[in-house]
Image 1: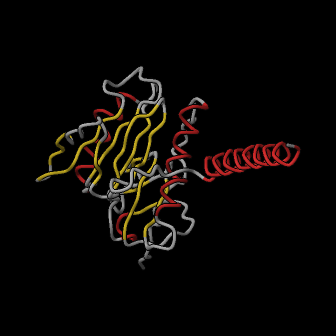
Image 2: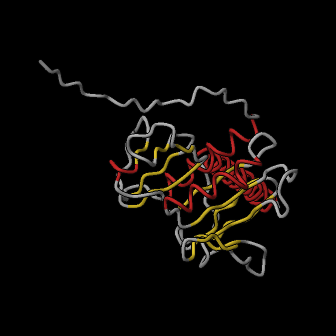
Length: 218
């Protein structure tokens, strides 16, 4: 008498390690994801980050956790993990926010994995300028090997996958439309800009009212 046993392989949603990032680094990661989600709104592009990405079916030890990434061709909805064999496409671009804790892994281990699974562009961003020089670096996969992306005249890096220029700007990563120079903003940043514009308009209107009263008084 024989029995058939089926093995169910578990792919955990957490690696069990404490997060332990600073507010600055966590906020930067969230900001990058938010901006890219807004940029690709309505398109079949999945944007996420800080999510376990499994890249070898049947081996739950083979995973990596990108800080922020895009996967063109996949719809945007909430996932618990990202499994390459189910998704059918590797992320085309990854952005890592480097810190003291992650520097070694970001510079040595992750690039090997990303090249192996076919991530076309890989950017490293150091908001504090303590661990990378220059603080923004980009690599593009050419014939299975990462090569440095040459900087533009203004020091920015052009991402072919995003169609945007990326630049280090006072501790923040700027996403810039190359044709117009427009900088993409997060929802919070847009509110600040709108508020400042409204306040400036109110001040100008009050100035004009005072000028009109003065003219009428004369």
